[in-house]
Image 1 (tube, helix red, strand yellow):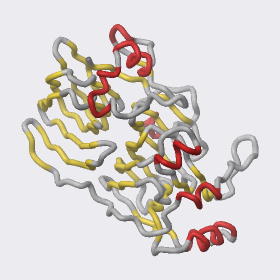
Image 2: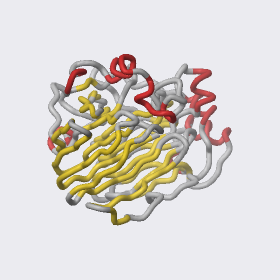
Image 3: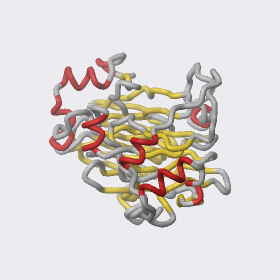
Amino acid sequence: MILKLKPAFKDYLWGGTKLKTDFGFESELDKLAEGWMLSCHKDGENTVENGAYAGKTLSEVIELEGRDILGENGKKFDFFPILIKLIDAKNDLSVQVHPDNEYALRVEGEYGKTECWYVLDCDEGAELIYGFKKKISTDEFRARIADNSFLDVVNKVKVKKGDFFFIEAGTLHAIGGGILLCEIQQNSNTTYRVYDYNRKDKDGNTRPLHVDKAVDVTLCEPPKYGTKPQGEVKTIDGGKSQKLVDCELFKVKRIDVESEVSFNVGKNSFVSVVVLDGEGEIENGSDTLGLKKGDSIFIAADSGKVVLKGKLSLIKTTV
């Protein structure tokens, strides 16, 4: 079973218009900061655009079909396990941190948030915040938040297209202005802001900070990981493949289809496909769908052989 999903859009104040101009998304919102491409989260659910389930949310489809469509790995999670976004940061995002599962389930009633970023494009000189330059104490972190000096000790990284960041829960981070990326994360919307550049929303209000919770969960140390995908680009039948990350929460690959690429969807996990560029089609049994840049496809576990045809670049995610 292959389902085409309609994204849920967010117009946060730091967002731009590249999701409209570059990806062709249509929305009444003036700016599109985020497109939630695979989501069963209450804050922004996908609806199905094709077939017998057209108009239903992905959550409703899972309820009707049963949790077997998530696969054996997917069924181990209490909630739908992941959330995938396209993010257009015209301006800097707040400096923030996310809790781990233990803290988030106890305090917020949802999963924590480990995530990863694949940089799709960026302005020259664009940079982001990724952990700290050196290890500091929690007391120093709190004091630097209070006197507005903590940006002096954060790790700022200049980025380029194709960079990849694995951001474990507890890692201080911020996407900088001029960066367009794909984010794969745990299914959580819990964010603790540390600093927001004293910005005001359209009503003239500053957004709330969450200093006490942020201090509780932040690992005040340099990041453990570099800025490269875990794997090298490999030639496969009909195209190329690169492992971005393989962890206990999600497995992510970039696939470039040059003619025809096929893979098998077994009982372990559903598959998400998000098209980054190009056009073509996807086949699964008697089902065929056209594909273009910005499309998001959910493939049920145990769907068997899937064939991708055309000239396509995509992100493939499983759990």
